[in-house]
Image (cartoon, rainbow, N blue to C red):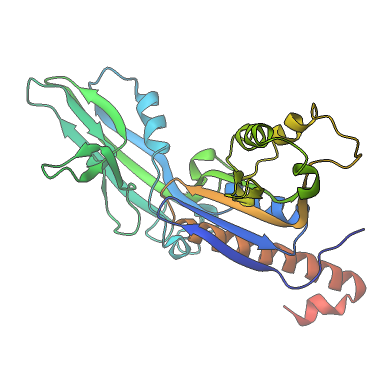
Length: 315
């Protein structure tokens, strides 16, 4: 079996407020997939868990509004500050306390004749660490044309309608409910390896070369000034193999292919998009720490099987 060699290393290719793209090297497929699943299902965040509706005269049912409130991403940058509700050492899984819960409120009444949009910006939190995520969109601009802050739509109120709601947010993970997952997208792929047979390519016409370059939907290839086909960006390849299909009808006496597309077995490209609850790099760091904790549990279990006194000495 071909195992990865050398230490694990990570190279960040792109990082902004919305996503991170990085390359992780010297790991196998099982490790890469475990990291992806942990980012989706086991990185904790805060989300609205309980909703008490004191007054609702809108056109939406109570259950529908409660569901929409639970799906609003909450800032969870200081998630380690809070404990899981059932494991809280201070309230011991009781009614909740400041160490495991955050109280929020939504009180909006429409006194005008215009329809009023109730958004996540109307939610008031008792904690500065946990509050609805802020969004800036080019669809909403200020007087100077700059993107302005806008919230997630919860309901629309007509004249005289009102919402009076109290909420409690708690810490959780995505495997318990999808609302706790900090990622919008978490995916990975192998790094492509592209080999062009330049000797074979020299036997075809310029029109065929242009057709070869145009066949790739990701614009991986380009034609050089000397009419040679070169790889412009191998990282853009998504293994569609459209370029290989183009060359299938080219007549040649050689048994060798015009192009080979392979992959590096122990090198993966990750792309992680956040819901806004955490910064992208925070998600990756929490996932790596969680994987480390899992591996430590396995290590201790193995040690205890070999030496029963190991567990006693580590308590």
